Length: 256
Ligand code: PXP
Image 1: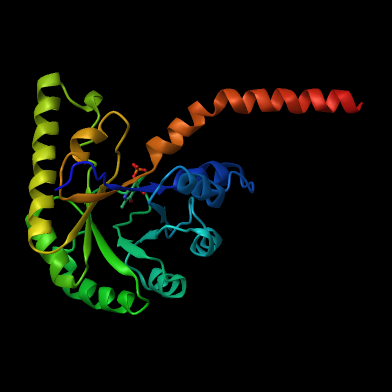
Image 2: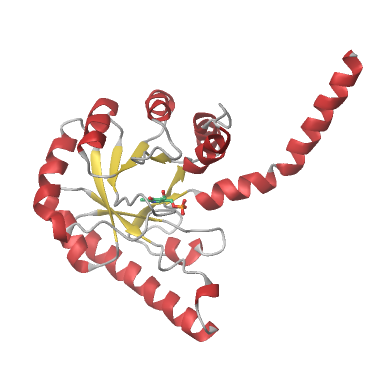
């Protein structure tokens, strides 16, 4: 394995749409964010079209399909409604995720082992549009084997437990042991998946601070990261945004 070759970065632009939807405005546009992400070197644009449409909208997906130059990864629940949308959109990759209306974000991986038969039929239908299919699962051998059996070519390992918050542990020791155990599970899961011929991605909850040890796992070829990038962009762009508003005020005064 050549260590100089970095894993691919899929930039998830859902939370650009979250800011837009908070006001029901037309900005900021996740499509514009996708263009900037690709200009900066992103290898893929990822969006989650949720059943409740809380951030990304159908129109965003249609426009992204036309404008993304790299790869479009459409995350969605395995429902009939989403199947129709995926077949019409023909994204590069479809990642099947569990969805629960009340959750703040995707909690836990998809139970592929528990729904293997119906997911096998679903994957077969999805593949007719030429999309690759990925299963967003916990780093668990039974889930990995079941994903392979459905005909999916990829899995995305849920890194949420590895990204646990120190605040939720009673001691640093307990926190560190958990992180180490979760990292081991991700590494073992990725190696097993790779050994049985699956391609491996990972994501959820990854930040600038915690991504390095997961990026070191050589069998993971792709990372999908969103919230931390959008959150960081808000801060690193803040000064410039304020300066530009001051300039807009000044221009207004000059006209008067
Ligand atoms: N991968 C999948 C399958 C997801 O559902 C999400 C969240 O939408 C992500 C990656 C990105 O997670 P985060 O926004 O925490 O980086």
